[in-house]
Image 1: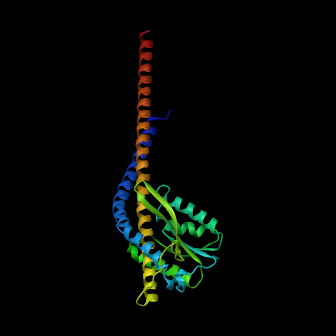
Image 2: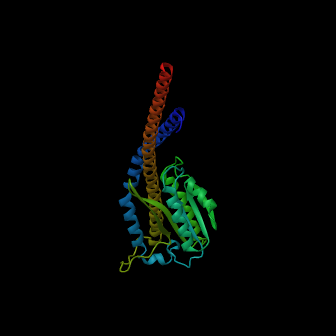
Image 3: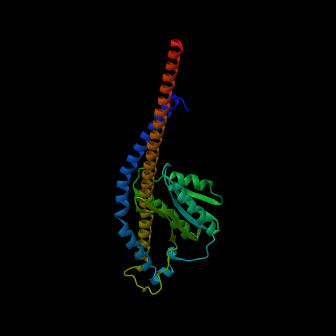
Length: 282
């Protein structure tokens, strides 16, 4: 049986860890409220933007627009959105697992843009992947200032035919306890579903189509970043909550072990005193 001093040290150590995990849980919960609101508010706008983007794909002008051009896929570009830090449960590993599967399914040379320091570390180690840019997701800049350079990178690579398709991997925020990693194609813009009506854009349809398409793509990238940030904080809050609960259980177990050891030591001392007294009297 472990000594009483050893058990007390274990209880203090677990207690210190519990204080850290509890504090991290509260910080993550505070950030989650802010990020959840930021992610949910523009969801209806992002959904409408995506529908409009598909609708624009039915117009005759898209036959010449460079962002709508479908061609044989010889090289692709993927935007990978993860977190800057660890200790968020399976959040980062789920993104990287989908990224690895995505690479295997494509089977072509791959370029990548990493959003989040953990994504940057993973992309840098990925075999056959060329990292062309990396950004910290919590850099302190506005989210739109993060989405714009990403949009500029992907549209330039696609328009110059350096890549033939662009995807984004991010974590969709469904609820506090449920998030899902998704792969979405950004470029080329998908053609409309069967039966979609064609439309003519006036005035200056070429300019209108170009401005609207880039703005709507920017909205999609921004929404992916916002939902990923909310998902990360939800995963971290749950992970720290579980860690705190586990620490509570360990403290209870160690306290029980300490009390049993202390009782055994007292019993042993009483037995020795009784035996000594009997020996003296005898």
